[in-house]
View 1 (cartoon, helix red, strand yellow):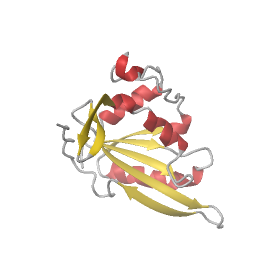
View 2: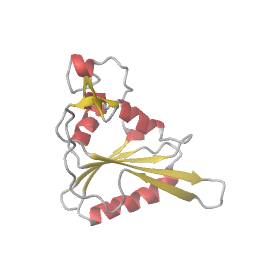
View 3: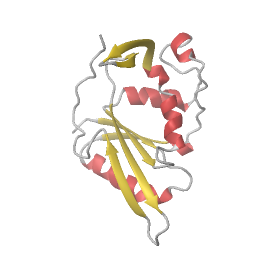
View 4: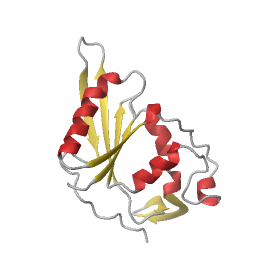
Amino acid sequence: MLNQKVVLLDGRGAGDDDLSPVLETLLDELHNHGVTVQTFPLKDIKMGSCIGCFGCWIKTPGICVEPDAGRDIAQAIVQSDVTILFTPVTFGGYSSEIKKIQDRWLPLVLPDFCIHHGEVHHLPRYSHYPRLASIAFSVSRMLWKPTYSMCWWGATPSTFMPLPMRQRYS
């Protein structure tokens, strides 16, 4: 687990400060295992939404045409071993902050398509992509003390290990 690079996308919104102890515990555990963590508190970062211009495919291949923090975040994601989406469950899904950054991942793939196991996929732009893990919390604020329900997708807390590179589609 040493020398692992993790990008943590903090998708908490303005009213989600009660998730801070959970996030602090996660960061402490990662640091205790020798993981280098780069955290992006998305609510505090000035970043535009994807406007669907496809300039990242045509005008500036692999780079969003919007000159803001979205470029830096996308670069950090591609250079990481694991990317963690830390989000409250909002209307049964992830937060709007996570949705906004995921929309900005379009430059990370090529505009070409292929069929892979009967599914249509974009071809990868890079030879390495990180493992993606999502940690989502549903907080009941109706009780005197917040209670948490946690769900992991893509990884378990003990699986931040070196990962094989994603196979290229052929």
